[in-house]
Image 1 (cartoon, rainbow, N blue to C red):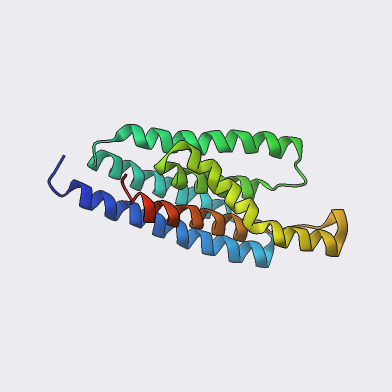
Image 2: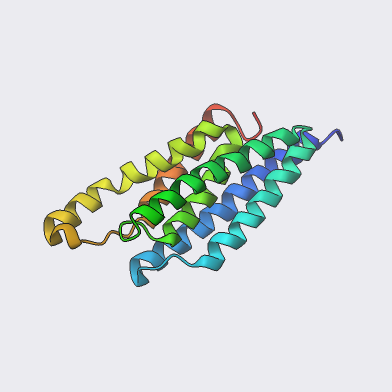
Amino acid sequence: MCQHGPVLANALIFLAVGVWAVMGIYVSVTDLREAVIPRRACWITGFVTAGLLGAAAVLIDDVPRLGWALAGAVSVGLFLEVVYRWRGGKIGFGDVRLIIVNSLLAAWWGLPWAWWALCAGALAEWPVAIAAVIRHGRAATVRWAPGLVVGTASVVAFLLWTKGPTR
């Protein structure tokens, strides 16, 4: 490990958070305007985030940490794949893609944080979902991207504040 490894790793983590945040704003606005979460934005951000996290893991000599981040994204993704197949009308695959990217970032701090990010995102969107159901009944549609992004941003901000980028 080089002498500046931890400093560079911290910078890479903050860069990953920044890339994710730009994607989060873009997909939230697009979801609100067009009722779609752009596939390319999610996948490109996911690969870039994974690359940045991987480089940071090498710099701090903690490569298994990247494995746990990937495991967090895969575990949440597999769960949501089942939910999507079972209740396809209630969740879109764009939501699933967004949640996988969110989970990848949050799981950098540990596997459970991917699930906390998902729960925080759902909780952030519940007031909007409840209002939509009251207004339009069971046929209501909810744009989940803004809540999912806000929930994950809250969890990541908490983790950066309490644990730091590489702890």
